[in-house]
Length: 228
Image 1 (cartoon, rainbow, N blue to C red):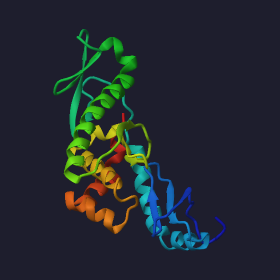
Image 2 (image 1 turned 30 degrees about the vertical axis):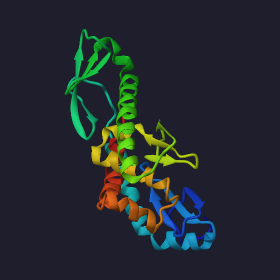
Image 3 (image 1 turned 45 degrees about the vertical axis):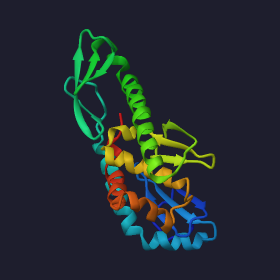
Image 4 (image 1 turned 135 degrees about the horizontal axis):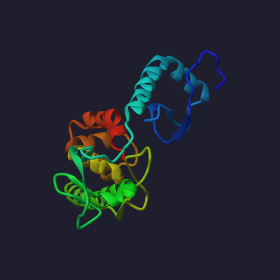
């Protein structure tokens, strides 16, 4: 960006029909600007300059979280998340299946080299079952009929829906507490009626979850933990 006063790098600007300008710090500390079509680059620069201290503070936190995110080694007693709870990994010499779950994860030793793939496949299967269940429950509650659902492998989006009524929700949410998963489900279902994040949109979400801001905050602060 050309304004020499600005020492913060803008990584991406996304323009849409939204009414306000928003700043987003991604999990990998990138600065993303969400702006209305009519907002000039000069106005974007001005807001970034005014919010530079806040941006740098948030980016510092994001970078620290990235450093804290420990790589998975798939060792005996290593803990893995499922529906907000932490469960240990047990390595077995023999088992009925390469990976099983029963209040603990049980992995056959000979499949250690494929452990990450096995975990991802297991999580995706559980996510598909659980999210369908929650979608059906909340779609009836809200009177929102969706077309079809699929688990998403997106890196930075927890959920999305399109004009055809198709809903996509990140499989990694199966690691989050159920209330967080439910919030994302409700969020996407409400988008079937309210296409943007207007006051009316949040009003509809708030009728189901009055504390939706707390759930949004949880995802921003803890989303980096939902990984394998």
